[in-house]
Amino acid sequence: LQNSYILAIESSCDDTSCAILKNNQVLSNVTAAQAIHEQYGGVVPELASRAHQSNIVPTVDVAIKNAGIDKNELTAIAFTKGPGLMGSLLVGTSFAKSLALSLNIPLIDVHHMQAHILAHFIDHGQRVPEFPFLGVTISGGHTQIVRVTDYHKMEVIGTTQDDAIGEAFDKSGKLMGLGYPAGPQIDKLAQLGNPSAFEFPIPKAPGLNFSFSGFKTAVLYFLQKEKSKNPNFVEENLADLCASIQHTLIKILFKKLEKAVKETGIKRVAIGGGVSANSGIRTALQAKQQQGWDIFIPPFEYTTDNAAMIGISAYFKYLNQEFCGLDVSAAPRLSM
Ligand code: KG4
Ligand code: ZN
Image: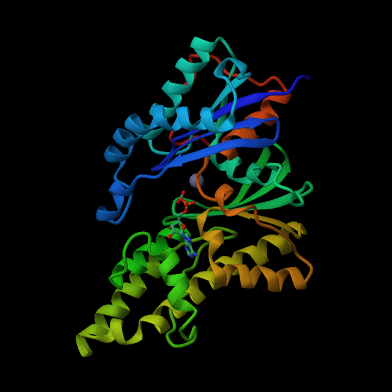
């Protein structure tokens, strides 16, 4: 097979991203983030799709320019079919179809959650996980444990029933008056605090599933109660609060990861998603590595939403000549 040059587009949530891959190597990976959502403390779907509309052409242009190739050299166009926000997905899907049509090259649809996991196979000079492994995606939109037996053979064995773990970080932070997204700030402040200062409940969820909404409510009630006694409670205890909240969220995550490793007998664990940047999670993973787990974390730029992961997923489909027709449509609730 000749070298492939795949142009990939990701637009499932609030980032417009375009990447170009030569086989499994990233030539460019350009992301336009949308600052507009910060003032609302979360992603506003209607604003996201409008921002994708204005960002997509310049993002694709820069990605092609940075890759140093001519668009006539492209061998296929890839895009995120789902899951995600309908209005956002539609922008990437329509753009990808038009581009494939005008260049007369194949179109490849990609599953966003599979892409988070296949990001581990981008050629970045690190070890790649062997099959089977557990793919764990933790971000502002996802909390999933997936049993991966081949590039596109994946089974979700645990998922959140309500909020994602990143949302739990962000919403707890909002309750303490921190800006959005609060995850990185909680991480920083937690390093100055005592993780056992306050105790928060571990929500119950069946099997390998997660629940975080009860946690957020517990934080809300706890802060309300303490603030009624001392209006400066949050300011006076911010580092301890952050450390205790982070400690509990890590406990919730690892309880299920340990259960998953035990039940499947698979000790290879590949982590992705923006929350994998958390220093407490990284320390806990190092401890697990000492205990015999084999941990994989890709470079940060491939853990958050990005088009390079869409490109690598498309590459494996390209090798099998798995293309889709121009009648393909976006699928907000696409299952694994
Ligand atoms: O993958 P991502 O960039 O976007 C999606 O949600 O798809 O993840 C963003 C999430 C946010 O919830 C943010 O607060 C969280 O990742 N996050 C962190 C850290 N860095 C990012 N949470 C805890 N600790 C961090 N260091
Ligand atoms: Zn994502």
